Each structure stands twice: as structure tokens, then as C-alpha cells.
Image (tube, rainbow, N blue to C red; front, side, top):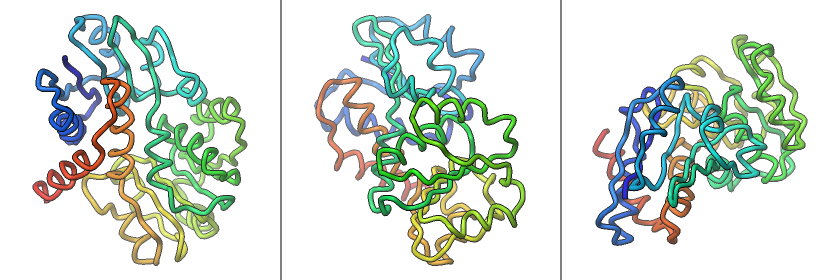
Length: 271
């Protein structure tokens, strides 16, 4: 069987490390997982030409929203989020699901329930973060974006999820962003590498998740750590969303420890 991660850019992805480690630990000798460069315009054609040997696809930026358009069936969670990072293809299916939510929940497991959260960004991962914060019992949410005019899909996702974040365009204003960050118990940056550089104001004791994992630490994560925040890298989210994907694609219980060991080794090798 085959599986792969798709996105653009994709060369940095550690998903092949995680899934290959899972297959080895599970004794799935005939399973293979690789990476393919693919943008939004190419996704439908890529999926259409896949044969019955394909078990599934992991989808990263910029494919998480368009994934719903190529799926035949969509999980209730992915439909509510408005984005999917997983396509299950076994038995002729094209089933879209979202395991980013589980990844964010696992990464933020030490966050205080009922606190205040700030989310940076308005893409598919930000939408999944809204679902994760709801699951964690955090309803006081501010989302900072570059332009509120471009946050319509995030607002629609919030409505479907039953959450009511304040959406503001202060992302490009360090003073306004800093004021919002200073009042947050939980901060999640869903921005690409470098986009949060220069943002400061995170308070001591806050829990900060930066979904970027390469390069690490980001300037934003380093500043938050220096301020006394508890910083979680995107590796934790990456691990746990992959764990859920392995279960969806294989139907087997994922070997979490083996996957974590392989991830740690790959990160150390890159360093």
C-alpha cells in the first residue's frame, strides 16, 4: 500500500519519517510513504490518477480547504472546520477528515480551561485551532489577521463550530498585537515561518504553540520563551495529527512511542 504527504513547499516535511516509523513498528512491510510537491490547482488531477494501492494522503498548506472539494465524503468535524488534512482512499473511498484538531488539543493539553486565547492567522490550521480550543473549554478567543476582509472562511467556520471569536486586523501592528498577546493565557500561531517574527508581548506563564517546526525555535517562540511562557513547538502537533492519520489509514493502533523516537532522531539529525 502507498500513502504520501502533499503540499507546497513540501521538501521540509517530516511526515514521511513519522508514517514510515509507524509502518515499520506495525510490521506493515509492504507499505510506503513519500512526499509530493502539489499546489491547489494540481490536487484534483493528482487524486484522480491514484490507483487502488493508495491508502491515503496527508495534506498540508495550501491544500487543506481545497481538499474538501476533491473528497466524496467528509467527516462532520472536517465539514465544520471547513478544512481537511487527511484523505482516506482505502476501498475506493475519498474520505476527508481533520486530525489537526487532535494535534492541537494534544499540544495544548497543559493549557488552563476557561482561559483567554489568541490565534494568529486565518487559514485552515487556524480554523482547526478554533475547534481544538472549543474542545479544551476555551471560549474567549481573539483571532489576529492581516485583513478582516480575508477572514470570511474563518468566520464561517466559527459559526459552524458554535464559537464567537473576536477577529481583528492587528496582526501587522506590533503594538495592537502585543496588547492582545499580553492578555492571553493561550497563544497559537498558525502563521508560516517568519510571519510572526517581531511580535512580542506574551506574558509569563502563558502556553504558546507555534505550529512551525523548522527552523526552530522561531523568533516568535524564542521571544515568548524569554518572556517566561511555556512554549510548544509544532512538532508536538505534527506528531499527534500523524498518529490519528495512521489509525485512519491503517485501521491499527498507532505506535506513538516509535513515532516520537523517529521524529526526535530526525530533528536531531537535521540540527
